Every structure is written in C-alpha cells, then in structure tokens.
Length: 481
Ligand code: UTP
Image 1 (cartoon, helix red, strand yellow):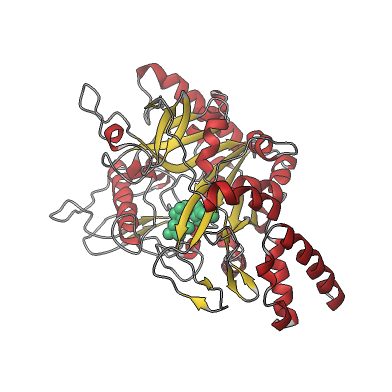
Image 2 (spheres, helix red, strand yellow):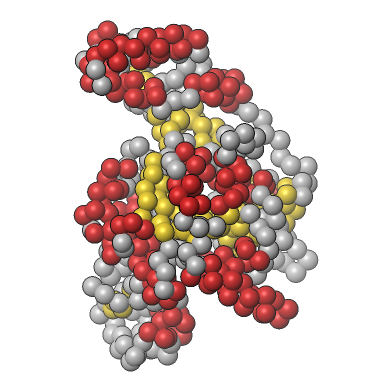
C-alpha cells in the first residue's frame, strides 16, 4: 500500500473515530513508522465501529441484567439408545444420515479459533499432541476420522476449519507440513473468524501497543457470521452441503460425522440439533439444556440457580440432567437465514471482565493483577432457541466427550488420554479381546485405535482379522504408524 493510501485511510479514520469517541486510538500516529501505521490501520479495519457503539452503553459501561426465563423446565431429549418404541425410527435415521453422508450433503466443521488460555499450549490447540500411543495431534485425529468415514461411506466429507487471526497461519502451516494428514487438500477449507476489541470500562477501545488494538476472537458464536463472511457458506451451497456437523477442536473423542445424529436431525426437521450427556454431578460446569419459557436453550452453569440444579425427580434422578458438550448439527439453510442479507435474528453478546496487557493513559504497557478490560463474545448455543424444532440427543460421555481444556486436573490432556485408552479397551473387549487390567480396573497398558482404521466397536469388529494379544505395559496401536 502506498504512502498516499495510508494517508487517505488515516484521514478517513481521524474523522470517523472522532464521531465514535475513539480518537485516542490515533494518539501515537505521528511517532509510528510506516509499517506500524499500516498495522494500526489494518487493526482498525477489523472493527465495526458502528456496531461497537451500540454495545458500549448496554454491555461495557453497564453490566447487562439478563433476566432468567420465567419458566425453566427440563428439556425433552432423545435417549442415546433407542427404547423399544424407537428402534425402527433410529434405524431409519441411520439410513437417512448415511445417505446424506454418501451423497456429500454433510460437512464437518471445527471451531478452532479459541485462545486456549487455560491449556497454555504454545501453538494452535489443534496441534496439541493428544493421543495415548502416537501422541497424534487433535487435527490429525479428526482428519483420520474423516478418512475412516471415507472408508466406510465411499465419500470423504468436506472439512471447514475456523481459525482466528492469531492462529490462522500456524494452523495452515501445520496442515501443509503434514500433507493434510492424508486428506486431499481440496476437501479442507480454512477461514478466519471475526475479532472484537477489548474495551476499557469507560467504553473506549483498548490499545495493546501504540500501533496495535487489543483484539480477540469474537467467540464460537462468531462462527455463524464467519461462515457467511468468508464465503464458506456459499461454497457449501454450491457443492450441495445441507448439514453442518459442528464440533470443537478440543474433544478427541468426538464423532466428527455421526450418521444417527445427522439422520435424526433430518427426519425431525430440526434446524439445529445438539448432543447432551448426563451431567457428572449436579453442579458440573457445563451448560444445561432446558426449556426456557417453552424454548430449547442452554443455560450456563453459572446462571442456573443452584436450587434448580440440585432438584431431583421422584425416582431420585437429577431433574436438570442434560449437559451441553458443544456438538451440533446445523442446517446450512438455517445459518443462511441467520446471517443472510436483511437477517434480523441476532445472537446476544456475553460480557466478561478480563485481564489484558494494554496501554495506560501514559502510553505504558501495564500487566494488571485485576480484570481491566471488558470483552464481548458470542456463543453458538444461543442460536438454538432461534431454530425450528431443535433436537437434543443424549449420548454416552465415555464414548464421545473428553475435552482437553486445562493443563492439568479435570478435562486435561491426562484425562483425555485416559478416556481414549478406556474407550479403546471397551471396543476391543466388545470384539472378544482380553484386555489385562490393573488393580484399579484400568487397562494395564496404553491402547490406541486410529480412527481411520475403526470408527466404533462394530467397525473394529469388521476390521479385525485376528484378535490382537494385549500385554501389560506393551502399548498397542491399531491402524497405522
Ligand atoms: P473454549 O470456550 O474452551 O475457549 O472454546 P478456548 O479459547 O479454547 O480456551 P480458553 O477458555 O481460552 O482456555 C471452546 C471451543 O470454541 C472455540 C475453541 O477453539 C474451542 O474449540 N472457539 C472459542 C473459537 O473457535 N473461537 C472463539 O472465539 C472462542
């Protein structure tokens, strides 16, 4: 970009920022080098100032008071295994889902734009070595799931991956370096999500440096807008994708493409479907599927009153028992409806007070001990109440959910590896293998099944020609190096 162009852009911003009360963002302009000026202008281009202006009073200067729904009731959800009356319906759903996958109507969609602060891993979270024997990274496991789907269904689903400004280049480089983990390049499409500025409590945008805005990804709910803005949604339409299989980058157990789930979504005419697990305990820190004033919604654990979270049914079971695991199927047309021209349905913003290293009035960088900025994020589950006929399907946690969120403890790399080994052991035992176990009943060695080799226990049964012999302390990998 030429010097003249920088000047033009500067002049435009000088005027508009004044209008929006954000002139301080240009305070250091005179002392910046040309590349720094370019950088600052690029950051400013990322911000929709008119949209931010509308959010400052209700969300930044004030804490929005979001009233709880008047009626909060348990959500009607389909069981993981069909009861007697639903055997035929579930079989039909598998058939419908399979036809959709075979016909290329289903795309996988991974949201991988998060900052992964809790894990503290140096690199995109998808590059995190997650599997027990090979230390295969999360992206590799999902790629192999798609290869397994191709083996089973003949067609390899397209894979859309949402990155952030911060991790996009590194993510693409990882795929390049590993030859797309065996997938054909043209099946994988990356796009960046939008960013939101961090606000100072008075409503002014914070500077991360004299030539940088403090920007961060706009939340996983930003994925819907990013699908549209990036052109990914148009590509989906052009190549006949009807169903978007949405999952997070941090769950190595996820069934990236699930014929039953897709089939149930299609058969019930749902626009957005969700998987739920039975909560581990009453106050588990997961969102709760509820009927909120009659509409299916997720109420965050911090918002569900304890008195409700602790309620029991007459048989002693938990009344609010359906925990959200952020696995969804969205109809492409539903996302188009939410994001298309003239769309009036908006997701609500969630406010969080965070610590961020930003410039103070004197232009010095401060490392705060207390939250000093307000960040606003969108959550994808807020689209559920906007959907027609939203479906909730229970699934078995031990088969499908063990996220890598934290460096240690609950939902960490250690628990995810443990759960991968436990699942592999169950599948092997279901096929008739003897799995040696230790005194605590845990498998006595690390076990790993490459998803490209087997997608579930039945698949494994059809793949095994002989039963492997498993010895304590001798790790076993099935399917590939
Ligand atoms: P989390 O809420 O766990 O956030 O994201 P995170 O950023 O990964 O981790 P922390 O909270 O900083 O420790 C759940 C999923 O949503 C994606 C993440 O990549 C993850 O797959 N996500 C989150 C986005 O894609 N964009 C965002 O802006 C936020």
